[in-house]
Image (cartoon, rainbow, N blue to C red; front, side):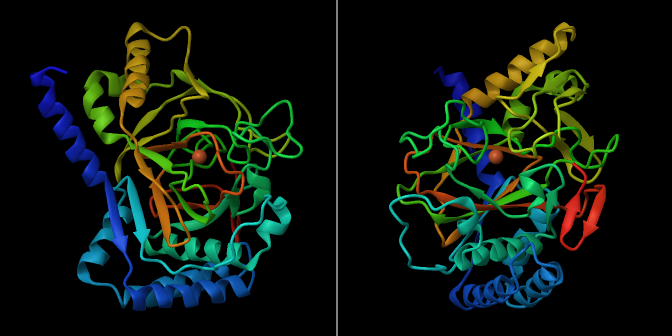
Length: 359
Ligand SMILES: [Fe+2]
C-alpha cells in the first residue's frame, strides 16, 4: 500500500465507525425489556394478534427510562442515518444448553425461549419506529424466521443432508454480502410489489462456536466508487434470481431493476445481492463499469464481524448495509430473525395484525 492511499483507508475506517453504533441497556432497563418480552411471548410472540400493540406499548414505557443520548441514538437509526445498531447488555433468556443435534424447525419455533427472543426483537424494532412484519410469499408468511442449518450445506453434514443445498438462511452454506429480498424497490411499493425490508434484527438462541455475522455498511463503498458509478447504479440495468426462501410457486426472478435509488427521507436506498444480482448484457459501458466497481468495492471492504449471543441483538439497516456469513461450523447455531418496516416505507398491506405484506 502506498502512503498516498493511507488517508483514504483512515477516512473509510472513520466512516464505518459512524455507521455502526451500540445501544447499551443498563440492568434496570434490560430487566424491564425482559419482562415485556416475556409478556409478549406468553400471548404467542410476534405472530399473535395483539402482539403489535403490546410491543408498541412496551417501547413507549421503555423510552421513559432512556437517557437523552440513548434517545438520540434511537432517533438516528429511526431516521435512516445509521447502518447498524447493536443492542447489548440484554438479559439472558435461558440457561438451557443446546442439545447434541439441532431440533426440528417446528419444535424450535414453539419453544418459549425462541418466542421470548422474537418478542424482544419485535420490541427493539419498535424502539426505532420499525414494525415487525412478514411477506406473503416468503418464510411461509411467518414473521419469525429461525436462521439455522435445517437443510444442509454446513461444515458438518446433517442427518438428512440433501444433494442440492438451498442457498438461504435455512441452510449451512456461506452467504455472500447481500440485502434481504424482495428486490423490486426499497422504500415505496412499485408495480404491485412491496419494498424490501427496511431492517432485519437478529439475536441468538445458541451460538456454541461463537460464529460471527458480517456487516458491510455501504456509504464508504459508494463514496469510494464515486458519483458517475453511483448514478449508473440508479438505472434499471440489473437482474436478480429468485430467492430460495420464497414459498413454493411464489416470487420470481426480476429484470430491469436498479441497485440504488434516491430517496427524499433517507438520501439513498440500496438493494444488492452478490450471489443473485447481475448486470444486463446490453447495458452501457458506463453501467457495466459501475457494476464492476461496486462488486470490487464490496469484495475489498472489511466487514464488521459481530458474534451474537442471547445477551445482544443486531439491527441492520437493510437499505444501507449488506450482511452475510461464513459456512456454518456448528449445526446447533440458531438465530432468531424478524424483518422491520420503517416509518418511511409504503408497502402493500394484506393484513394489519399481524402485519403481512404483498411481496
Ligand atoms: Fe440475509
